Image 1 (cartoon, rainbow, N blue to C red):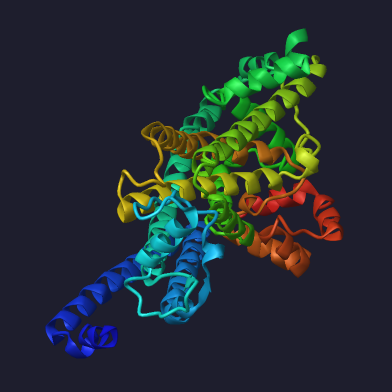
Image 2: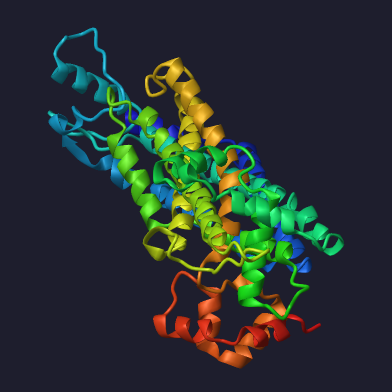
Length: 462
């Protein structure tokens, strides 16, 4: 009987206008999305936004990966649904508690619940066995992958828009340098950040850095002091170096690194799905993880600026504080660890929001996986706070503070300057500039010993 019903529901017994209409709509939506991304890429190339173009290409690769995962689920759904397992293995670690009016026995409730899930499937398991995964559950996994892809794209775009808006606010500070030659009062303000006995105490210094990230995380005195330290160290002969434009290029390069979904992020998704057990409230407690990491990263970056101000305060005879770039202020002397944490924070937050919308669209607002209303509101508030604070404050702060690291960054040079450097120092240095995270120690030492005057001369070429 089931076989007859399955045959009658196949494409052979479906009106052709329905098949053609559905295929037309799906193909049309897919082509519009593909053409839209293609035109966006051409626009970025036309405006010479190479970093954003590379970020777009990476985002398209992630979408293709998600599409390939969905394709695998579709192709192998018959094989997966044909696998049968003992009922005992399906009795534990469930996202929702099962209820059965037929029997109060947990074992019988499990069997009844699994039987209901497998009613839509034609799989015939032996007595005492149930399907590994029903067709309905596989369909819901398809929806989850689609929702994750959409939310990931939206959050990546939000991150770039908010981060760029924050750094563009610093442009008038860069322009003020041309009109105002006397910046001594701003440098004195920057020195005050590290003065005082209590500010030098570790606990007080960290507390002040913690609260500073919420309000005026970067002041004009901070921007000018870090700008001066960077230019005097890396390009002292180029007094017309546009530091703000360089910051925008650096943000775009950092953005390219955080749009991808690395293997350890996929591992996190698997662990989360494993621990999403009824009664553990994993979905609620895990929402605090990106918030805690974000506050820790923001406090660390603010504390680095404070440490730099304390170092500048030691040279009281200097009118302008000269800050020396160094990796010593960063965790394990590696600034890239901070960017990797920001990458994890943004992905984990987008995953949390995607999981919420998936549950809402698939099971409804009052689903058992949603849990209590108070948990839902708390998670949503945390998600919005993390996204806005990380994109608008922490990521631009990272782009500024990491300029005080020891390594050169690719964003320091325009396209024609990068070509000149490729011819000058060879292919090994070129690889170092393009991949600052994976740098050979020998190549790094060679780059750090390049005369800064020569770099300045190249930067000033038309």
